[in-house]
Picture 1: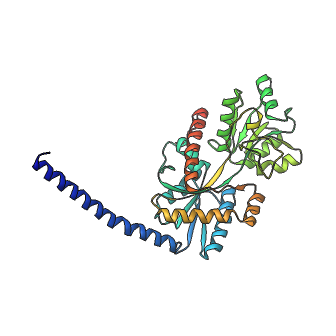
Picture 2: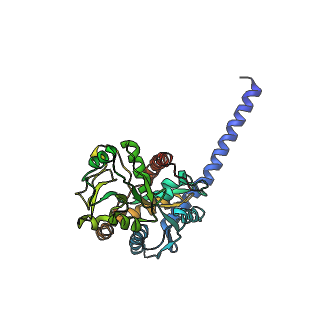
Picture 3: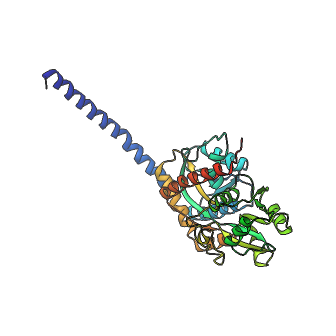
Length: 338
């Protein structure tokens, strides 16, 4: 190497070394500051945004976890309901909140799994605008039939539909919901036809199912379990990958000829993107500890669901897989919201 080139090379090395040292001097204090901030967290009330009305399954979940966190930290944890646009309004609000861990959202299958493929104009991205904290719950949708339908399991129902001569339709919780899209995935895999009737939630759908206006329905198990126990409806299959611990007598779709079929609704906690990792880890660990409390677990089961806590890393991988799965379902169904 010529002397001039060698001098320039050495000068560049010295400059790079100095820049690296300067960067380290900046990063180290910031990391220490983040750790100190996490150690003191929370410094004021935590706001858990539920993007749905009060009283529903998501709201109950948030209030149980808020109860546990408040006791653990001796700090107020407030649940705020911000419903609208299938969970989008409340989720967007948190995506734009200050990323300090004091404002988080309890997202669900729709807001953080389906809507990015369903809505034409989304104002947030569940993959890039949030820090996943932990999954919270998972519960089965149940495929049910009117008591007069001559089928007692999924294969008998599909055989009946493929045979023809029956004018059946199925009801769901609404267009683009996990119940609707889950059934569309099953129809695609099973190769059978069954017209869709969307409802505004489970209550009116179950009423029509009981009255015989529709013959098949799919909705959350808690909405139909009492009718199944009384013999007014028949549970054909659940959409969880395994049998539900609190309702072990009901078989899954997967074990009735569709291995690998998993399409249950879920919920999980998210913080805004940019929330420091030490705070993300502290929030996640605290929530997982709370969800392991036997008393709160029993309350969750009584509400018709189960706690399914996970690490931030596992929850992120789960979200990515859910977005891909529901994107396929949206495409198959042709559902779209402008």
